[in-house]
Length: 457
Image 1 (spheres, rainbow, N blue to C red):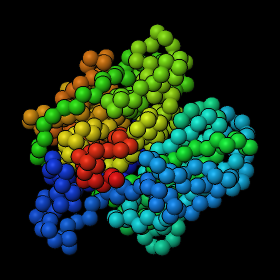
Image 2: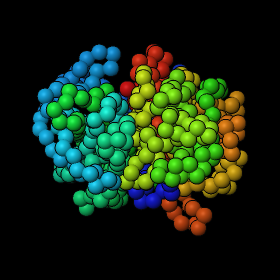
Image 3: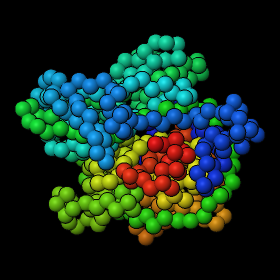
Image 4: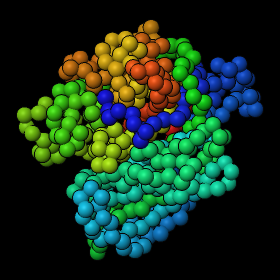
């Protein structure tokens, strides 16, 4: 479990239309049309998917952006890096009080017009930041009434913590929208105000008078807009199978490293991330793990916690920081998005792609969990013949107990809803289908088809 879902982790969106996405990875829009009775062959009758993930990843993408001091680089993983720095600036780290000078360069994306104007947007990125470098991601949007947001900082990030302390930025608002840790949210969706389009801006930093540079391979954002609801329609099981994902417990780390939120229930996100990273073959070296107390089991989980820790949020549950951590492993990329249904998850699992889902629930709402939570991440690694969810749940007493089977109907509701009642009877938020997806930098055709079916490319 992660830190409690305070306003900084609030979600104002609901799960998207629950629709049948066949295990052969048919487009989500067609499945939505099937569920609603519309003609899937008639574009006019197919409702727009209420989740829009868009990314810049190709050499052409990087050449289309506005560059000040950056250059596009080609190859198997095209990206941007510092060419000739655009200038110098000082940065005072709010978590250490240290002021240092940095050279910088910027890249600003073209405007992306959202397929469905959004009430929430979450950015994510994949990058390499060698020692002596870091990056900042910002978002500026245009509202549906034609006015603009300010430039909002979505994260200041480095894979290590020796140069700056990785951080979100609190206190960002314009009276109409607010940044809640890692999420842009319209303050009052009932007014009809939406974000119609946005640009993302990268600022790359390096120590002055060096040739060091960050390299960014993927920059994207997920926007969505679904009306609030407490329940979602039931989906129909369509795939059975299980992936061989490693199993790690967060609970065996309880009390470890208070400076990274003390292990145990606070480490669900990095523990889940490490499971999926290792499923794809990502391994940490003895040198990388040398700082961990040698008496601790599964030291790679401690490392993942340190590598995802947000010094402002004071926890390891920053969604983009987890995706960025996964992408530090060779040959991997990671995104934060939303899925519309369990059938979309089936599409991914059938292609060999597990997912990390975010949900909150009472103890009585998820049979067999044995706990309740205001916010928790777990892996989904398969489905039984009856369609129930096979999870790698890190909220387990030990590694051997991590594999769980949860009832399909219960799981899909707690994951996809955006409103729920807490133990006191108060209405609080749900995540509306948020998930992390980690997958190969060069997906095979089947994997690519499945990712495209859920809106990720």
